[in-house]
Every structure is written in structure tokens, then in C-alpha cells.
Length: 182
Image (cartoon, rainbow, N blue to C red):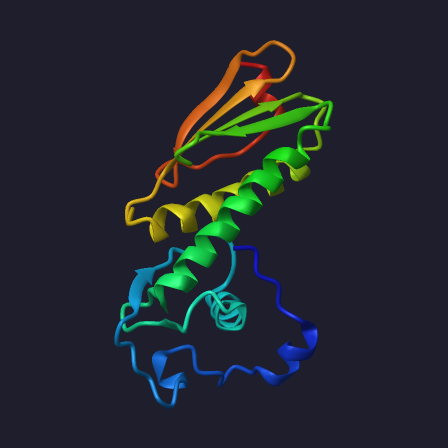
């Protein structure tokens, strides 16, 4: 889920904004599924605020162990999964017209293959990979995989030579010109 926070809302939220489930006056989670959402890309405050505004869950908060929790109905879960799939496909398709990189994602969302030219704009490629990782993370978690992971294979766009092969989030992924020198 790519969540955006509107600046007008930011003015209403200060450091006293309650990120816990105490935020909810009539908290009642009967019949809801509970998911722990790892946060790989943004600060907890921004994530909780955006999660609450998204409509993808009934309750979003930080628990006593500092985990981000999302509690939702089955319909909200299905909607969120559908959104993650749509964003993954859109991100992969957006790279189809590029001359310097392309992406493919396995059918079960456990592998990303990134074919990248040494001349590609590294920040643009990395932004797209992070978007894919965010969505795949949510997809796997909502489908019951608490120990989510993604195999990222990076290949040279021109030669097809494998530049890196890592298991994220256990291993860190990056893109640098040195990868083509090895």
C-alpha cells in the first residue's frame, strides 16, 4: 500500500497524537483479523496515520511491543490484497517502456527479477524496487506469511549476467555501479 499523507492533515497531528489502540474510543475487535505489519520504508507515526486514513483496516496502531498492528474485516483484507496486486502489476508494467531496466515478479510474489542497465537512473530503479517490496510484503502478510521474504535477482540488462541474488529482508539490496565491475 503506497500511502500518502496530505499536508493539511499534518497540521492537525502533533507529537501528542495517540498511535496506540487507546486512540479508539469504542475499540471492539470482535470478528476482525489481526496482522503485524513490518514497516520497511517510513516512520511509524506517518505509517499509522496513513493506515488509519486508508480504509484498509478498522484499527491501526502500535502495540506494547512497538509492532504496527492492523485489524480488519475479511472484505477490507480482500480489498487491500487486490490493491497490492494492482500496484505490483502497475509498477512492473510501468517499466515495460523503459530502455534501461525492466522488472518481473513471480506469480506467487516471492521473487523479483530486475534487469538493469549500468546507464539506468539508479534512484528511479531503487524507488520502483522499494514500491514492489512494500506491496509484496503486505500481500504475503495478508495471505498468512508472517515471515515474508522476497528473492531479488538483479541482472545486467545488456548481457543477462547475474549481478546480485539476495533474500530480502534478511539481506540488504542496493544498486551501485560497482556491481557491473565484478
